[in-house]
Length: 170
View 1: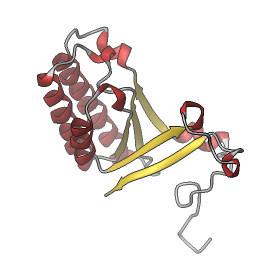
View 2: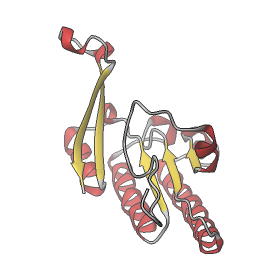
View 3: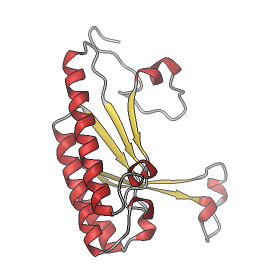
View 4: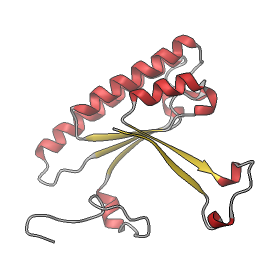
């Protein structure tokens, strides 16, 4: 380590290394489950508005904490299965709310000390809509499981469970 510069798991990426439990305890995370949102709202539009309001309050509180903290730590937000049936009823108008909400979340994150991972059920939507969702996002990746594969997997991949496809890096 050079003076004033620390190297750690945030500065390198090594899947063979295990993160120490003390490091995990310091990570600030917030997971948003679709059941949590749906219990309050019935429609996808209401769910999207509620999600935005919840994230806005969370990020505002996080930013004020970060200003006071001597050792700042990013807030990591996870939104599970955004746009799935559990978020509310689907229609073409609902698709627009999904895109607007993702764009609004992106705006919130630009002025914050936070990152957000959104999982999205691509099998429920058309390819053209999924392309629109990908355009709104900064980074897009796809996980492909070998257990779901119709085609026989090569023996070279026998020790792996699937593939990690990077579709977009901003």
